[in-house]
Length: 356
Ligand SMILES: NC(=O)c1ccc[n+]([C@@H]2O[C@H](COP(=O)([O-])OP(=O)(O)OC[C@H]3O[C@@H](n4cnc5c(N)ncnc54)[C@H](O)[C@@H]3O)[C@@H](O)[C@H]2O)c1
Ligand SMILES: [Zn+2]
Image (cartoon, rainbow, N blue to C red; front, top):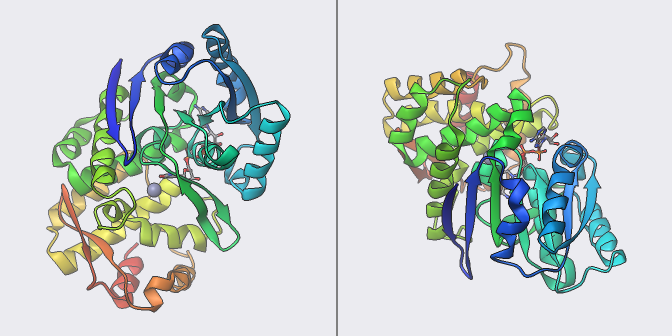
C-alpha cells in the first residue's frame, strides 16, 4: 500500500492507494474517525458492486453505516439531491458526530462532499473514489459542489476530505471509455508539470498499466499545485485548467451529451497546443507528442467534419470572462511546463478550434 500526505489549509489528510483497500476500509478509517454512524453515499452503478463489501468492513470496525444510493449520472449532482441526502441522514438519526463516505466517481465525490459540508454545518468526509478520474483529480483538493441551472459546479464549498481510499481493484469494472477520460487529466498533469511522467506514459502499454504508482504521482502533482494556491487566488491552481476553457465550451455546445468531460478536455488540449505554438513557441514536435499520447489512450483530438463549430464559439462567448476580455488562458511553452497568458484572443481561439 502507498500513502501520500496531502496538505490542506486547515488539516492534512492521507490518500491510501492499493489493491483490495475497500475490504479493509473500516480499519483504515479508524485511524482518523472514532466509531459513529455514517452515511455511505453512492450511485446505482457503484453501490450494487462495492456497497456491501464497504458496509461489512465498516460494521466490523464498529461503525453504523447507512447506504444512500442516487441515480448514476451527472443529473444527480443537484442542490435538490444534496438536500434529499441530508433529509435521509437526519431521518436515520445521523448527527454532528456522524460522517459521510462518498463511494463512487467524481459525481458522487462532489455531491457527497457537499452534503457533508452543509449537514449540521459540516461533518467529516471520506472519499472512496471508484473512477480513475476521481482518484487522480476530483478526490484531491477539497472542491465539492453541485450543478446550477446556469452552469456546472456553481454551488459548492471547500471541504477537503479527512481520508482518501483508492482501491485500484475497483477500476477493473470501469468501462474503457470512462478509464480513458481519467487519462485525459493524467496527460494534462504531465504536460503542465511532469515531463518525466509524460515520457513514462509514452512507453506504457494502455492494456497493461501499473495504476498504483501512476495514481500516486498524480496525487502528488495535484496536491503540490493545490497546496500553493488552495483557493485559486494566486494562479497556480488555474494551471490545472489546461484544455478546460475550450473543453467546457465543447461540453456546453454538445449539451453535455455524447461526450465525456475527459474527451472534451482532450479536444481542448489539442486546441491549446495550437495556441501555444503560436503564442509561446511550443515546438511542433512537442504538440505532436501530446496529440499522439492522447490518441494512444483512445482520446479524441479531431471533431467530426460536420460538427457545428459555431456552437463552440457561442459557448465561449457565454464565458463572461471572455466578453470582458480578461481571459487568462493556460498555455504550454514545452512539455512539463505551463503558464497563464492574457494575450490569447477570441480570434486565436477561433482559428485553433477550426483546426480540430
Ligand atoms: N471536485 C473537483 O475538483 C473535480 C475535478 C474534476 C471533476 N469533478 C467532477 O467529477 C465528475 C466526473 O467524474 P467521473 O468521471 O468520475 O464521473 P461519474 O462519477 O459520473 O462516473 C462515471 C460513470 O462511471 C460509473 N462508475 C463509477 N465507478 C465505477 C466502477 N468502478 N465500475 C463501473 N462503473 C463505475 C458511474 O456510475 C458513472 O456512470 C463531474 O461531476 C465533475 O464536475 C470534480
Ligand atoms: Zn477536468
